[in-house]
Amino acid sequence: MTKTLQVELGERSYPIHIGAGLLLRSELYQPHIRGRQVMIVSNETVAPLYLDKVRDALSDYQLEQVVLPDGEEFKNLEVLNHIFDALLANRFNRSCCLVALGGGVVGDMTGFAAASYQRGVDFIQVPTTLLAQVDSSVGGKTGVNHPLGKNMIGAFHQPRCVLADTETLDTLDDRQLSAGIAEVIKYGLIQDAAFFSWLERNMDQLLARNTEALIHAIEQSCQSKAEIVAADERESGKRALLNLGHTFGHAIETGTGYGTWLHGEAVAVGMAMAAELSACHGWLTEADVERIRALLTRARLPVAPPAEIGRERFLELMSVDKKVDDRGLRLVLMDAIGAAKVCGDFDRNLLNQTLDRELGLTGS
Image (cartoon, rainbow, N blue to C red; front, side, top):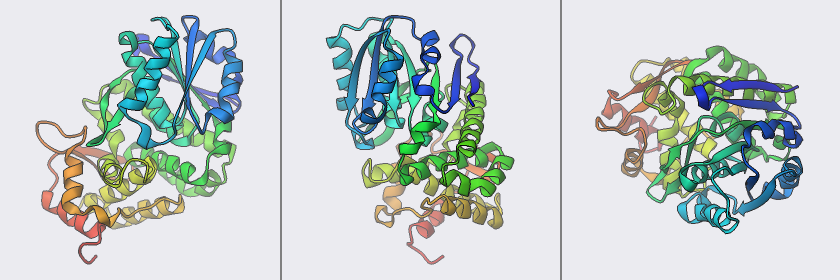
């Protein structure tokens, strides 16, 4: 069973294929490769598992490969240069295509390399983690981290297609699976209350890696993201809703050192904190906050931030964020489950109180 969705962006529209056994299906790659040269980019964890399958599917092309170290801590300009080195050493031209085989880090870095090499070449996303399949592989956000801020150096560059092979999730460890489920829950929170309820009913199936449940969750998530990206490709409005929990979460990732917390774990805490702050403003009910916390906990995700960061440091890290503009910090908060909004006029005192309470600096 293969599901196909379309990201509607005019002449840059592209399909998202979701199903089992897609890595080997050469006919899914071929329409999106315009030249003869293909560079597969993977990492040390994924390459031993799946690189040969992708090479077999692309055996008709001039193939090269780059295998990067695995981990968020390697998502930087220095490691990005490994991709450029390989492209230049092998004399890849402007009609080449890069294939990102891996999780979100590989996808973001490969996409940024594709956006930059000779001022822009094609790339295909082949995400192998749940988080990448439901979020980072779709929408064209690419980039690397800087010691002072996550994802602050990058470009918008859409892939030619996305191949989400659910069989790659069989080798995903439980922690990475849960991290991906955090982004799935996000879609229910921002605009789909019915999907949130479905997740409450089917969380055990997802954790057990039931194929039918996983395909449904990936399809619903990708459909939501595709609709939002089609409406607001470069995040001038509605697309900012996809950042629910991310400003808090990025502060955790940067403050603890990249790679200490998984992205989805940090986002889970960020969503719990956004729910608490929304309730403090009287927008979200306490019952909804409890539902959100309960579902995150059932997904084996954390809901409390690391206390060692401290409130002032947390605020400092939040201020180095892509959601900051000339008007200051903007947060994605909620009026209800399934109804998120971008807020620049939230109460700063309530933010401070929420941080103090969540960081364990005051009594609850």
